[in-house]
Length: 128
Image (cartoon, rainbow, N blue to C red; front, side, top):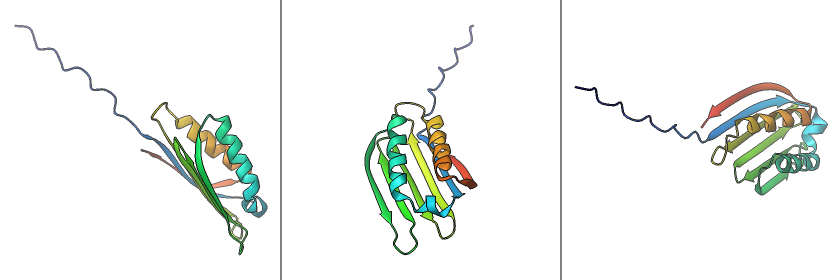
């Protein structure tokens, strides 16, 4: 008697995307430049084919730092700066809904680090 056929393979599990979280040191003037950061992020989002659906930039008068959050159809990116400490925290998450965006997430981070003249202090990747 023939052996029964094995069940068909399961479809690959959907992986929602990659989330990068980082802390980096950078020169205080770069960490105070909200206007330059806005230009940089706007150009980066467009060049990488991402879609911005809203953004908020808030500058802090007491230390010159800023917070920025960009909402993307693919998800988001955010940065918070502390020029008085020479620090920034950054995160970017892009969904894999239409395509694998892992490389794009890493590109966004690397280009952000370069724009700020940053030196990485902490970096983690979370697979969602």
